[in-house]
Image 1 (cartoon, rainbow, N blue to C red):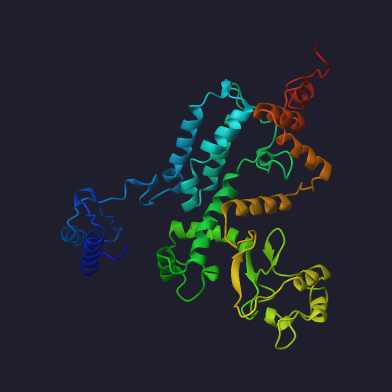
Image 2: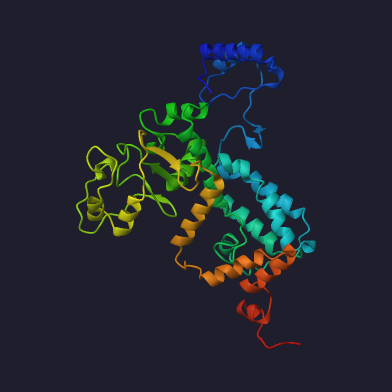
Length: 402
């Protein structure tokens, strides 16, 4: 990626020659192509092609399954993901597959198809809805042409099998997309000297940090997608306290619950918006001033702060707070986003321990997946018994027909 001028074209040629001498691999101009910007004049294009000895123009093809250049409607460009998933689903014989078989196919193959694209781009909501619809239809289909009957809401099926109750552990496409993009945001944050991080910094946040960077003017689709992932990263990013000088008490996430967060202030307490964590210690030490903590924060958060042990001779740093090694993982980010989604939903209720144990026991049975799924359907109200049929307006007599 460079400017369309002769000097940079000569520099590219020099780099390619140097690469060939170092690696023994030569660039084949006949198989190469150039992608020009919309504003490059035809005369300049011809001069650059002559210098590089590359005649073909690219941009219409794909690389690793993704389009080389994004032009026009994102929905239309990314629609190939839906077509590929539907083609794969139609190739499976839903009539002959048990629920256990469908479970394995969907998780290992079906929902894995768009992972690479979701790791790079934020999928449009409309596309996420269509992917979910295709997956849901396959799951509830019996192979016939009759209308599918979704006995359980898809949001419920996306819950964790053992921890949230009633779920099957399917991925919500939107949340999984954001968790995957969070991995790219983590790379920019944790590897500031990488080529990707340096290119993005020179374009979007020359004079600020990645966590403070804004969308900017005329942002690329890649940058928009990374910032979407950054929101997930921020929710689990924990400031590890060292000298305490770089961490603002009220705006930095340095306490950890389901997500990383700032502490809650005590009602009627005086709030200093410039307060640093180091101001909460006794002078010239890293010992917490307990009296100040209980005067400033809620009792619960004051007790949490007292358990934090500042690192000696270290600056404050950012780590992924949901893993012991401090390194971001897509799985932990997705679990965090799912918990936050569940907690913020209007019908959220904590699962009683007895009920949670019941759901766990189903999936721990040493039997075939088919039996486990039948038990799950029975407990979830997903069997076509008369009472359930009546609730859907398909049956008027709920008495036993035997």
